Length: 337
Length: 261
Image (cartoon, rainbow over all chains, first blue to last red; front, side, top):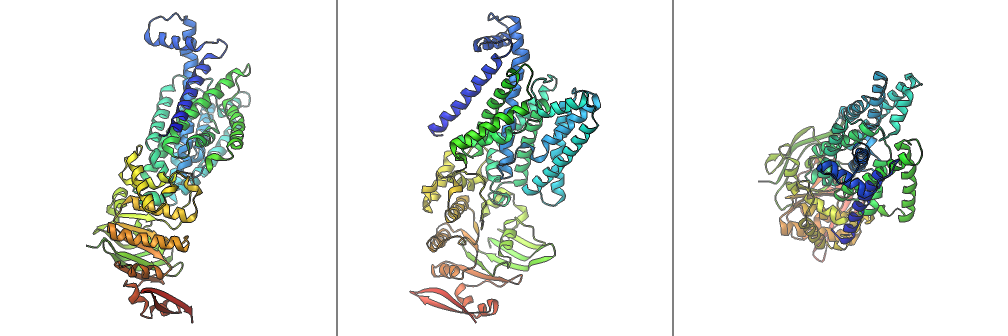
């Protein structure tokens, strides 16, 4: 690893650490970085470091879970975006390409109608997200050999079916409360994370990301095309299944606690490409760091800019889009040359 | 024992028969040139041999074992592939692309310095080491072809399969690549199977002192292979392409001159 890369990695890690502390510090009850660290230490060790119980409670029950969730969701979405872009040799796809987002969106809406509330939305989102990807695979397999092209086609079909079903649910939903819940859930938010689903969602995201980190060099080889990858000695079907499973688990876990958040899986890999180039062995971990920082930052803005929460999905697109235009101008498409 | 043995191989796209009852043998270290008109099924045959396409009937044996009995990793130790065209998606560093040739020896985790050194050594051998740090999306078509060859050579397989390797190359690069292939077969004992449109390629191999076989593919059938000089003096071309041709010698080398009837 050259020194230039070393500095870029150090910068990304420092930015993430800074963003973590800042995000946990700002809010109606401001805390300094020292207070945050002492509060966590006090809770973990059991010894008193002179922090009041209200500060410890705010950090441990509120700020830390939210910030940590933001970090994981951002990292998971960015990593799966990289994986899908490499897998389909297309820099314009993101984690929604196989239908996981629209499946999850439909699942959440269904649970809101069935149980008149968002109690079971994360579970439904998770299951339907996975089901949508499985269906995409089945559609691709129906047409014979499962190729990257057939998978994208299957994903497009399944996505549009779930989008239509979601529209139908919105149409029949009670406009006074259910419709608003469905719309709000689909705009994404970290405001109301249900702590009962955290273990499953965290586990799914972590396992998914580990699979992607482990299979990063396979993604490089897969992006050479199926035939060349096979002739270089890669078990294409198995490698692709592992990559898709990792990306799907990571996305489904993220979507189940945060709702559908567009744009992160598309834009973060591109930003990371400006800095560390295209090799997925570097790109995926770097995108994870950037995705984590980006989402925490956006979520912090969402909850502090105005008195009411701004939905996360709106802010990721607004800020991410503008920043991406700036990057393209600054580097003149540099990551692509 | 033959390295590659193809028997009674037939392939069709739906109802369209591409070739039938094809047989061919390649011995270790042998150069085999597959020649034939556009669309005669040369590429399809290569894809069947490589295991990319599933033939309707017949067998492909590698070292006496059926193709299907090999895992992808084992197969990659036997066959390496240089595609006719390669679509580039992401700007990987050229050195990393060449290093992918050793995918079969990697567990899937980070590649070591050793792999980079090996890849760089091959690139030096092919005279393209100066491209190592460039993004491979910026290379010219000819440079890309050399990179694909470097990647396949780095795979270090028993048989190298090339689909019209000189199709995008200028005359200097064509000579370079033909000499490289001769050199590879001589020094490493690598067998080579390549398709080409140019009869001068097999002739050049034969003049270079290699053990060369040439076979013509036409109308869904593959003729029996033979030495290029013998085949091209037998009046065979007149029948197949309906053209006049004559083998000429310049400074002890054979060339094919052809004109229409």
